Length: 156
Ligand SMILES: [Cu+2]
Image 1: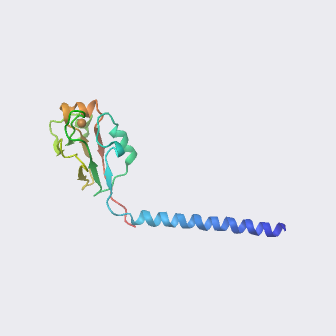
Image 2: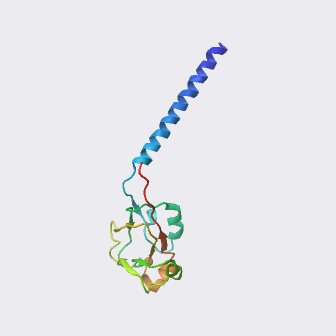
């Protein structure tokens, strides 16, 4: 009796091991084959909005990969919401200061409508994104700023 029970336990644990190994292999396979670029909605379900901490969001959403696309969604100007836009800054200094003087426009106040617009991270470099509305107020007080540095995707 004791012998039989022991055999049963051994069988149960070895099949659990097999399942575990299978799941591990499946995960490795999925990781290795997920070489296609991702589309990431900036801000998750909150989209591009005033008062959400995008610096924090970017840190939690990392890593980003070269050729991934960031989706920016925001309502066009209307009577109930603030207008937003997306600008690219040149460096971390201007990001810190919310200095838009050398900024380039990535999306104007209407381009975030509906499904929004895509910005593809084509190069392995730092990107600095801000909302350009109210002369940097949305960037500073509204926390609408973040930087990302996409990394090269590992091939399997
Ligand atoms: Cu804004």
